[in-house]
Image 1: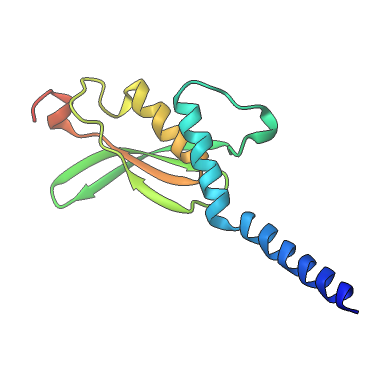
Image 2: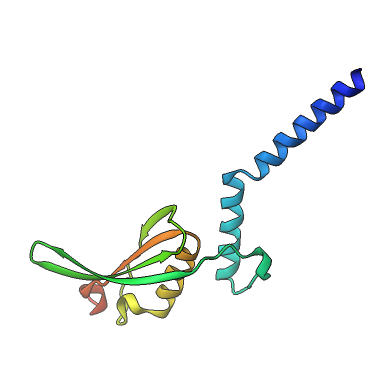
Length: 126
């Protein structure tokens, strides 16, 4: 009888450990690791990929007398979080290849990414 109870407890404990390892923090940590590895230039095998298709929408944002152009990067899955990326001092602005690649990588990992065009930094004026 005691062996049955020990096996049952061991089975329940094992189930809780497996559920903990598959919980959201662990999955998000794995996705973050894949993203860092992707930045380093390593491409993991296709079975390990968690990417989704990304669409880019160009938006015109008006506030009082000012008008801004921005790109919105969205994945085909609903986003889990949002982020605004500023391009910094770059003559190519929001279309800088490094910024576009970074925004796409974030969007592939279910971020909604907004990249506005800023005229001052684009003209190399801080």
